[in-house]
Length: 188
Image 1 (cartoon, rainbow, N blue to C red):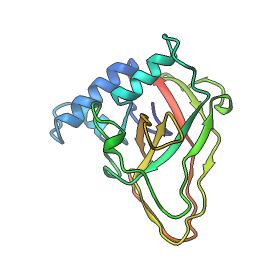
Image 2 (cartoon, one colour):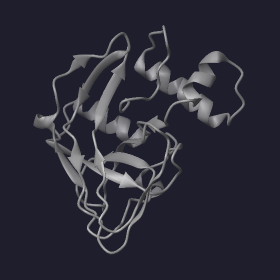
Image 3 (cartoon, one colour):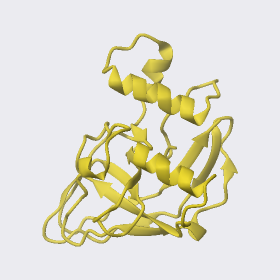
Image 4 (cartoon, helix red, strand yellow):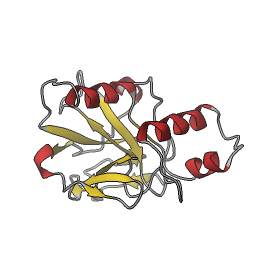
């Protein structure tokens, strides 16, 4: 999965889960870079389908869990502008943004764009740009976004968590507006 960036291995085709496995190993081993691939993976934003997100994904296909008709786009202030939770962590490890007027944004499954080839890297779908409400009296720092399975913050699960492409935190002040164009890509 990526959002206009992410794990790109020039001239290479990697299976999605193999790319995740390599990315997890790179994050676990810190910043010691011993190979060209490790260096390329580190240069891009962090992203993850944690285990609870993979459970949701596999519940939709190939299993037949109750079909999700929406997921929710959420912003986070925990972790950093270049890190996300680990595969074993859950929503309990994510601090969701909480500025004045902030609310999760519903992403209806029927509104995602056509699934398309993304060059030689995989298949991708993009959602139309989402505008969050104007920041009220108090702002905050945003390090990226995540997808939640439900609107409520009680009992929700993180489907995936992603930093922004430029690995820069967004500091929001009163009257600011943030827009996000969600995308999901599965690699070969």
